[in-house]
Amino acid sequence: MMEMFKVSEPGPYSTVQDKGRYGYQQFGIPTSGVLDQFAYRVANMLVGNPEGAAVLEITVLGPRLEVLAGADIAVTGAEMRFSINGQPAEGWTAFRVEPGDVLSLRQVKTGCRAYLAVTGGIDVPIVMGSRSTYAGGKIGGYEGRPIAKGDILPRGEGKLLTTSRKMSAKLIPKYAQEIVLRAIEGPQDDFFDQGIVTLFESEFTVSSRADRMGYRLQGPAITHREGVRKSIISEPSLPGGIQIPPDGQAIILLVEQTVGGYTKIATIISTDIPYVAQAKPGDRIRFERVNLETAHVAFRQQEQVLQQIKEQL
Image (cartoon, rainbow, N blue to C red; front, side, top):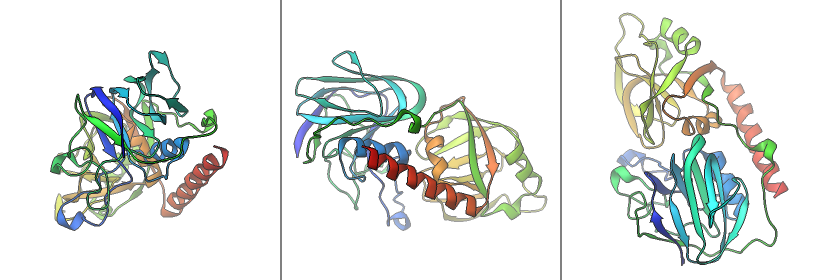
């Protein structure tokens, strides 16, 4: 472990995250972890880390960090105004930084969340098998909370790159303000009839109530089938589930929810969850109905792209 960054300005919400904390949901501990798995994995590839190394997940407005040790760094995900010592730097590219350098990540241009990877990963204590922050429970990450001014972020051991690395521009995701998310009906689709039509034929807007627990949407009310209950006995929830509360305004569940008692009309496929993570309040969402086979194909295709990126770097 070595001291890597001193936080000069923290930004509104930047947390240490990794691939997630699994196996504790039955105790009310959510998985947490990064919301955009694709950008996260590529960030670690760019600096030569194992894919599960911890990174800084940065929301909307980034921090200013003073570099305390030599390392390679990369920023992926949302397009942010990113600079090193005041000089503009590209995303999805690895850079060598030295003690005394200053990194600044400012307001997003497109997308919502960026990922800062560093040689060796951000080295905070492992709690229940993960370095991820669950701020609601004050668990993991840096003292169980978002970073704050004056914090010192350490990094782990890792080899510095011998050649520069940059991701092919054609493979960089585009984060639009109009998003189409593929979803499979269920598990409680039998609670709906016209509501399913509304879901797949309407446009919805991301509300201001959007965070790591879930995104509440605004749009046409999704109605339950006449005569059925509008809630169920609470059951485990997974990222991507689309809950319909009694007011008919959909909620997309994410990584800091463990159980829920609202009916789930459909589930967003895992490869599209990063696009939820990159949506901001005011962005517009439509849903496309797909089947399980399509979801499996999309997953395999994404893994092939990630393998291609790994081989090219």
